[in-house]
Length: 420
Ligand SMILES: [Zn+2]
Image (cartoon, rainbow, N blue to C red; front, side, top):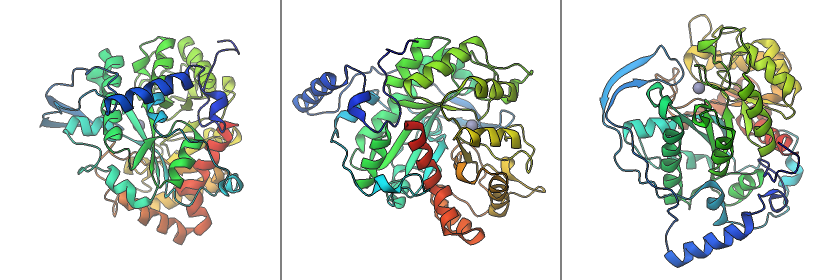
């Protein structure tokens, strides 16, 4: 891709300079349309929802499968606006505030209760026929509001049975996600840029960042990366556990690195401003990425292998490589990924945090809780509300500053670094 391709870098600080060229005229057209019709736009047609659910695959461990005869949602109409269009509703210019001075010191705007890099709530809610505002899953908008204006990354993730129809299935999930956000735009908005996060924090709104976990929805076509970018996706986890067109997940590791299409995608993602996520990627792919990447990247939900030798965790040299590149790692609450001597608790989580700090990655550690991607929760945890307890426990085990950095400050600084 040439340097002259108009791109909107994720989390850029000056949105008007970096928006796609068509953004502003398009925004006014759409705003006019919305005012005229008096309703949220209906750009996308409904895509056939998944049929009866017989086998539920738990996201983070392909071996874990739960048989459950659930009917999935028939509703979730596809009436939704695309990511770019959603932005238009609140297109005010950013204001210079004291937040400008708070960057780079591990301090996020105070309203941001936490920044979490990974939740599987979209696919789980669809599977279980729940909404995103108020449900009995790990995460909903109502409980996120307890934290003021937190930043929650919502992942699109596909069970094996949807992989052959990955593009359409991912679009269906994004339709659902967008319609849920649009229904509750008074409390939550999609964040496409760093400025969006800051504005939402000022307005006490939740920021929702959209990610794709496992790039199967690209179906091997680079233009689909642009399609999903235009629908609001700002993070792509290159692989899930399985092999895909980009490379090999930890569950399909034969020692091979990124495929040619994976290398192409990395370059295009960095041009567009889609953050690259290496959680689930095999080691050879990880080191290939280190050799070709030019921007900081993330491991959205992975812990330390040296404490918990699970294939999904990061070895110390990987952690250091992420830190050296200014990247970020989200600590995962899934017990299998942080248990020490067979026990998973907040104590074992503290051991992982301590380890990251001890090898020099203390400024590169945030949250990637993986909520709604596993069950059961670690002892003492119930759902997203438990993150208040986690913040207190980090304060007790370390100090207030460390807690603040892990809960939100380090991630906020990562977004700032990425935008530069
Ligand atoms: Zn995952």
